Every structure is written in structure tokens, then in C-alpha cells.
Image (tube, rainbow, N blue to C red):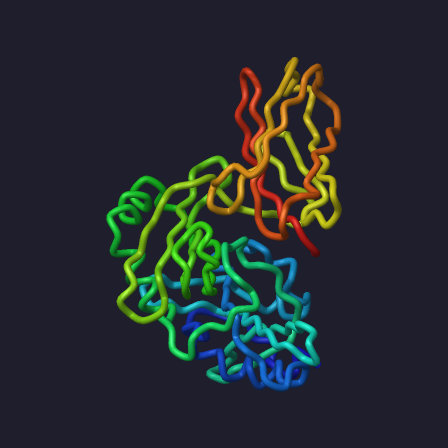
Amino acid sequence: MLCAMVLCLPLNAQNSFRASQGQAPSTTTVKAALPSPKLTSIATLGDTTFFSSFIPAGIKGLLQFSFDPSSGNATFWGYRYHESIGGKDSTAAAVVLRIVGIFQAFQTALPDIPSLPVSLSEELPSTYMDSDTMAKRIVATSVYKSYITQHPKAKWQAIALGMSDGSQIPSGPAWIATIGDQVTNPSLQCFVPAGDNSGTAVCIESAGMDVQDGESQSNGVSVFPNPANGSTLILRIPLSMYSGSCHVEILNALGQCVSTTDYASIGGGVDVQQDIHSLADGAYFLRLRTSSNNVVIPFIRGQH
């Protein structure tokens, strides 16, 4: 059925589009669940499969993940909506593709993409900075130019628009983009106020980001399950990483430390239970430090 609808054609750059262009078909689709949907966030995965576990398999098989920073176009965008019905908060979301010039919207569940300091119940303004202007603002910064020179293979891994809660970046609508190549290298976090087209981009380097479904690992160290929807994350330390003690930090998507734990008398070849019950849903990094190693591993807290 899905193949017949979209002609089984893989998406490519010619079918990419700006964030605002998919809003109308996404709104029409979620009205089946929410009578008067209010748009609260827009996101895409850029050039990687970051967070791709939320995409239905039939749609995921058609996607060629791509974001063009010269045009601000992506091969798909996800739109999250919110509405209070009978005093109860309700949400719905849709993924929008464009196949041979025709927009197709599919209602689906969306996680926080990425882990953002935004309110998912606060409506975006009726007009906002579109993705093409956002991308131009970011690539024009000296920090971005320097980072790309040092990391020429870096890709735009996740791009999202939402209403900032004011905790980590100024309140109001804001674009947040993550750019990087692999978890062992720094990634770039860029923020652009999006209330109009005059926002100025700010970019900073933080820990890297590249998430695999089910299990993430680096240098033989692994964490699972990933995504983790319980209160515990399993940290597997190989024999080659034997150390009398280790220090574990959990960082949020902005590279800020939100939890620290010190373990003593832990040998290699063991599984360690890391408490994550206090973490909000979103993307994180576990950084393991011993006397001879420093490993960063990404994971997702929340439903698969």
C-alpha cells in the first residue's frame, strides 16, 4: 500500500524541501487526531540515521537522509503538534516527504529530536525563521567555518525548531542544529533565534553525537538498551579496559554534565548498572574515564 502510494521511489535531493513547506500537509494529517492542532516543534535528521528508530519501517526504507546547508532543504521534516482537549494535554505528529513534487504526510510518534531545552506544549509563532535562512546564518559564522575546516567530513546530524524554555538559551523560538562526524570528535551545537529573519547564529563545540539503534559502543565499551526506557542503563566494560576505578559522567545534548558517578574496584569484562531514573527523555552521552582511557558513548533516554 505504501509502495503504491509513493511509487517506491527513494527520496533524493530533488525531492527535498524547506521546513515551512511541509507544515500544511502535516497539519491536515494530524487533524484526524487533534481538531485544532498547534504546531510546537519541527525537526529533521540531516545526513545521518540519528534518532531514525522513530520512523516507521516502510517509510524509513524509502528515505535517503539528506540536509543541504546551502539551501536549508531536507529530504523529510517531522512536525509535532499539541492541543488541550477536555482539560487533557494531547499530542500528535507527522513525518512529511515529497515524492516527485507531491507532499506526503504520515502520522507517527516523534521523540524529542534532538534533546532540546524547549517546551513541547508551547506553540510556535505563525511566522518563524525558515530553514534556509537558519542554515545561511550558521554557515556564515566563523566558528562553523573553522570547525568544517578541521572536520571536513562532519554532517548535519539533527536540526530542530522549538520554543526555548529559557533554561540554556534565551526564551522564544529557536533553531538548534548538531553537526559532527563521529562520537570521538567534538560536534558543533548551533543556535539561532527564530522569531523573525534577523536572528544571529551562535555555535559552540561539545561532545560528539552519532547514535546506533539497540546498542552504542566505542573502543569496546558499550551501553544498552539504546534507547533506554527504564531506570537503568547497562555499561559493559571489556577486559581491555581493566582499571581499578573509573569515573562516569552523563552529558546532555549541549555537552553539559548532568550526572557523575565514581566506581571503585571494577575490573574489565563486567556489566555495570548506571542509574538514569532522574534523566528526562532525550539524547545524552556517557563519558567513561579511567587512568588510561577517555570514552564517549551516545544513548537515548526514552521510548524506542
